[in-house]
Length: 252
Length: 290
Image (cartoon, rainbow over all chains, first blue to last red; front, top):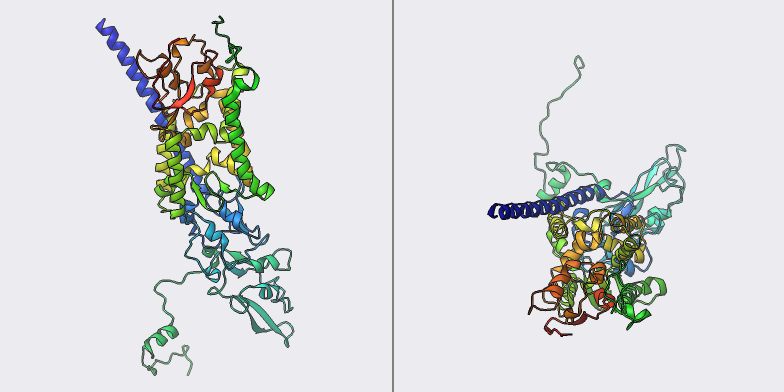
């Protein structure tokens, strides 16, 4: 009698633990699966730009609750929410410069709409936004580089003569004309994408790239002599340092 | 008196209620679900901006912020401290469901409920009994798993796959392939696990059930003495384990359904032909003899 009772209790206990293990195990499996999927799926394609004021991509995905309030307050329908199957993290806001660029509203309604801070409310001046950086990626097909006067990217730039300037160069092909080369300056370019949108080519020669792709990074130990000189208020080495004269072997 | 239990739930329904009245709470629930959806859709479809955003976070009449607290908890676990707007929005939602019962969200607001209710209905109609449900506690483990996963990956983890927000967001902003996830849940609930998603797996529902311990409105079974064991309520209840203590509890125990997993859907009230159940408050412990 007692043994039978004990057996029954054992069976119940065993069932209880089996069920517990099953529940915990399957939950762990799903959690790990979703985590792995999240790791892979969070890569943002280079053409997709985040709204102004967006935190860095890693932090953005910890902060954005995917509510779409920024999308709703964008007066130009620039922003959209990624649907499942788009290559952008599902439900997060983005825009494609070639389709609809950012119009750089001075009151920045999208940033104000963000309830969580995924779009940083510290951004008060849209000129300080850094959604990406325009890069003239194709110097072979850019009409200005061919010596023609297209200038469209320069003309449409909201920060004309600051974010994009036309730099004069000699036209080696004709030998007597100038090239006016569109040149982007990272200290003024907000990455709004108007240049990419309006490039007259079939595929734009100028594109807004995310910062991580658009910018190089000098070695941390690099020092630019002329800047160090300016900082120090004078040359750091004696102006006339006696240097040995080296000539090719046998030369006089 | 008709005391034989028929195969289909509701088949023994008393003649006292007919047609619409026999589905009073179901209809009210559907009306609420669609009304909430309509409020969200009125903006994008008709330009009437009463509510902006979606269930994850929204702004009502340009002043009242509402934010999903479970989502915000994952955001915190992922290492982000949200702005006051979102924290305030989450507090309002928390407070509301604390009063009315967390899983009221599941039965009266969540769009996936319509999908899983349809699946449960179809499963009953087709007489499918095959398949196996995961343990009901799986959802709590999954709730913990998503929080740990959010911490580990630094992202709001469940949002990568959450069918609740995907369906709701999909209806308002465009769904893409999210329909496949919804279809998957429908098939899972129909063919594999009875009430599998909402009752066993969904961590959103699990989170909201944690807010159900002091809910004021509760379903009670004051006329449990009249129960003729037809089992109709067990068949329609999305969380049938909550019924037993109220219906068949020891003499003198409360007839209230106090389990935090009761979604206050009222299906038992609709289906019972002995009028055993009714809505009341958690302070109403009265039982009637009949």
